[in-house]
Image 1 (cartoon, helix red, strand yellow):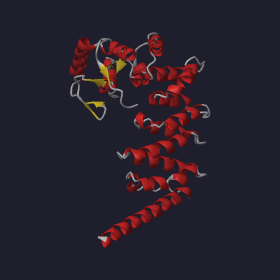
Image 2 (cartoon, rainbow, N blue to C red):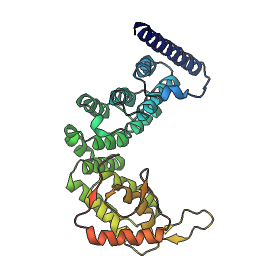
Image 3 (cartoon, rainbow, N blue to C red):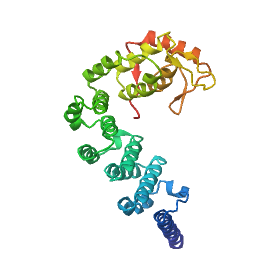
Length: 299
């Protein structure tokens, strides 16, 4: 038994040493301006490996920090280990404050892929603190704060919701709506009702409405689904025919509805006939418009 335990210990020590050397070698290459492919073993969801990334988050070279953040993100999203996920969240939140604006934006995007319940009270405070210090990507950070549902941020977000900066105002309204504020959702719809329903609205603003997980916003989207006006264009570059905007809206909306009749796969609509699917979703909404449920999971 002792020999067996010793063998296991030596094997683990060897694996640790190899990985440590691999990480150091990899980052030495990045630091020298070479960009080898990141070894797949770095994405294995190993806590020891995650700890070894720590010094690289503070490196003076932007590319080194960027690779370290990315490895932490990929490693954490490839595992069910919550300790690793939480460690990655802490590192990525620090990365939101990175002096390189591109890395800051990347880390905000990475954080949107984590379950909001994994963000600790400290994580929430750090995000709120970052909002007052970062110069770029404030709209994206505001939406992340709304997704995480940081209650202490409500007054701050409401101040942004009356900002003269349209992007900040819009993002704040979305975030507060996601946090359950109905007045903000009504304000959003009042803005949209003055805009034409076309490709621009569907591709740029419909994802924002889905983000809110708000019934008022979803009801507005169903008015587009129920419309018979061909105000959008097909995605086929060889045949840009006018089509119903409802087809595109249906793609965005259906995966976030409970008990709706259309099949989805990996968060995307999976149907053979869009014409039939649209009619099925319209009929379903007619029968459930007062009691349909919205899936809260995900960003």
